[in-house]
Length: 152
Image (tube, rainbow, N blue to C red; front, side, top):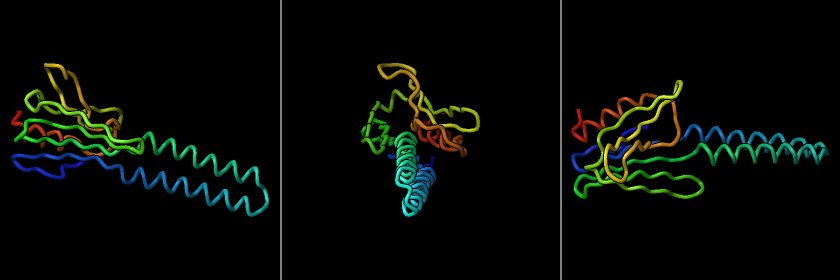
């Protein structure tokens, strides 16, 4: 997760799972190559099974874990929009910027995610920027959001 734009009027925070998606593509291609090699030896059932196993497991992993997340904070119009994009489509949720109290880091084992906290109103609760917990330093991103919001 990183800050891609930080101006007085606009703050954009993004999470792009590039390494996860490349790893899953390599996983799928590995099973395809292995399955084709088995097919070329004449064992049709085993070859097709290996190919299907790789494509199905890799596809499920790709659908579950490869999600681009973005938080756009727009001061002139007074909103923050959380965008999540996956192979299944895009989801956008917009909140009033005045409702956002602060940003926190939620940790789970050795992974973490940045979450926006809304204390009151219809959207009260915690709103994670990314649904996925990932490794890396998220504290700097949360501090940047809090600085931009003027929270300390």
